[in-house]
Amino acid sequence: MTAGKEEDSIPHSSSFDNKMENDSDSDEEDSIDLEQENEKVKPKYKTIGKAFLLAAIIVAILVVVLPTTLVDKVKLKTDGVIFRVAFGVFMFCLFVCLLFIYSLGQSQAWEEPNLNDIHLNFTNITIIVGIIIEFIQICSFSFNSLSEFTGSEILRYFNYVAVPFAPGISFRVIYWIMFVLAFSPYIFVVTVRLILHFMTRNYGENYTSSFISKYQQKIYSVLWFLVNTMYLPVISSMFGGEDCTIKSDSDSSTATLDSDPKINCFKNIHIPFMICSLIALVMYYPAASFAQSQTQNISDIKFKPRVVFIFAQLKVILAAVTLFATTIIEFYLGAVLAVNVAFLAINIVLKPCLVNWVNRLRSSLFSLSLAATVCSWIAYGGAPKIAPLILLIVSWVALAILFYLFYKFEPTLSDTLISLGLKKNIININNNSSNRNSKEQELNKV
Image (cartoon, rainbow, N blue to C red; front, side, top):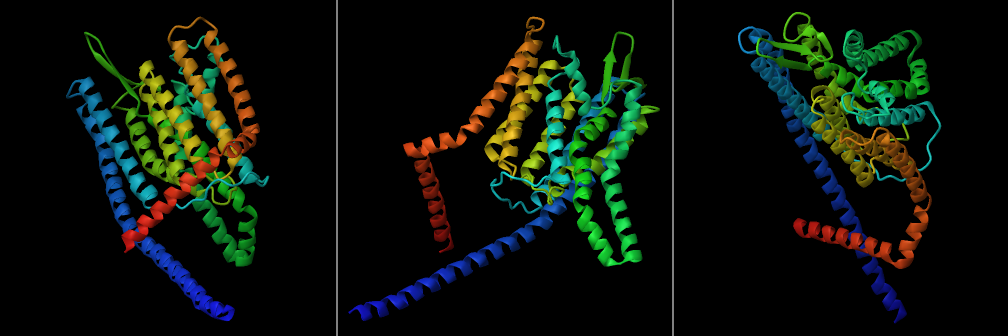
């Protein structure tokens, strides 16, 4: 009887193994089919993206030609409206181009955050410094130079980290520096390739290979700095070349560049600024937005590509409202508040970094930035003289203590939830939903 049972069990187990093998084979076939479908879809996305890039170039020509041609033929206010609409369409076309070519047309596979330790090397240190600079840049938008924040005027100087110029002659100097930096990623990559080509021809492939392995981290770190840390300064400076204000009175109308009020818009010296800003935005904005996620490959501190893409677009919004809506304080502070809330919510919910403590650090920094914006609202509302600054200091200290205690006792809280059975129930609910989804997929296959 026992032998018979064993004999009966053998074919049963083998059939089970065969079923598992068949299932794994079918899963592999499904994944291959999915990859093939994605490869078929990508060219469609890229074609659409290229079409919008062409449209952006055509609109860029109109941005220059229409206002400069009509400046003496129509009312200056009408000319300004045409310019702003055309520039808005130009930026929209660039965004759609970026969306289809660099985001939807790329693979977005990613791992869940599971690291706590990183290597102490040049690349990781550069990214950590970049995260701190990013916080200063984002937080600085809370201190608008035209919005009252009595007692903390010195904090407004931090905005130069994001918008690196003041109206006047300094704008012209900074503008041309940032214009060159807009092409610096291309210049840097071409220079590195030429150097490697020279090494290969003169010293051989082995020497070049050892050079790359030795300096690869530093090369990627420099490129990451150019497309990430310098992203806001370059974009905001190029916007500064297009930021015109039209003032009208009973006698006449004037259009001047806010970044340098001595420059009259749509004529003479402003035309080179218009052309160069449009060229720099075409070359830098899409490529830098994409390269931010691609230059982090050799670092331990990696971020989900699509979250990096979203964050880059939110930074563009901050730069745009700073340059084009500075005088509309309610709209400006409302936009900054909304963007800060978005930064914090996305970071908490999606946990975009592969390293857990980096997600915690950024959540803490985004919270401090949000508190600064709220204090700016209070200051704008007519609070007593030094109150907003005191409130800012108190809120930052309170948030720092709160985050420290929360992250320190988080394991204890997790153990408490497990002991109460709450976390287990949540896990069971998630497992049941995933099983339900897999069964639905099997039924769809049938």
